[in-house]
Image (tube, rainbow, N blue to C red; front, side, top):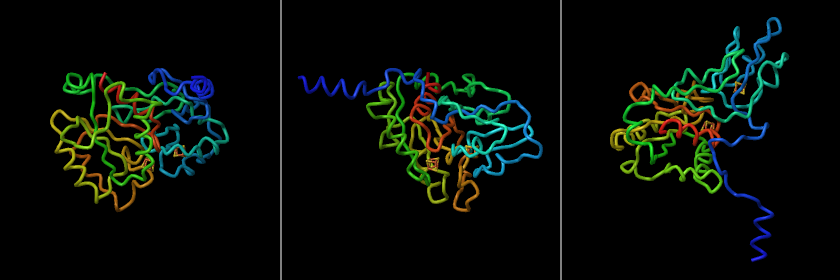
Amino acid sequence: MFDILKIIKHQGRQFIPDPTTVVLPPQHPGRPAIDGKQCQQQCNSCKEICPVHAIDIAPVSLDLGKCVFCGECENICPSGKIKFTPDHNIASNDSNALIVKEGINEEIKFDADKIRKEIKECFGRSLKLRLVSAGSCNGCELELNACGNVNFDMGRYGIEFLASPRHCDGVVVTGPIVANSSESLRITMEAIPQPKILILAGACAVSGGAFAESPAVDRHLLNVLKPDLYIPGCPPHPLTFINGVLKLIR
Ligand code: SF4
Ligand code: SF4
């Protein structure tokens, strides 16, 4: 008995009581805030250093759907305009809302009016998801796996990953969608009964990420399948995934 008490005292609480309100430490790079102050003359440093072409200048904007959170733009900016905040609530059902603009320091918008009627009617109490790795490096899978562990405990909301698409309500795609996995993704989507949800998780899935210009990538399927949720990150933090899905189904 004393041994158990000693372990509890030493290790503290092993779970997050409420993932919707938890605040991450300042070191966590979440939503960036871009100050409205003037850039130095002729400075293109952030745009030039960004490996995924996520930044535009004049005015400065940063596309979270492309960003791999390397932090180089924040480090190189001589004016200190770009600062990453610990705000992990960066998922949205509108890909345009992922573009952070200069002088506007506010939460990433989630448009409740855009949520399909079937989603509102059917998925409020639980959601079973099939993960399709469409050329992922496995980083996203590791974090999505962590969503179900004792710490984040996504299962408390009835959200979990299942093996058979026949038993699922939607697909979570990771990776840039390489040509070799495009057909598997199409078949998996087809196997899921209506109504079904499509979630793109990670910079690769949302925009192609670091592989957007690779000839191995074929994202034509997204012209037919309309994503319901975009989850930025490389990989996404479990809290970004959990809160994004909760916004979609609640
Ligand atoms: S943190 Fe994002 S926007 Fe900035 S340089 Fe890296 S990938 Fe580009
Ligand atoms: S978003 Fe990042 S972690 Fe996820 S598959 Fe792409 S490179 Fe890997």
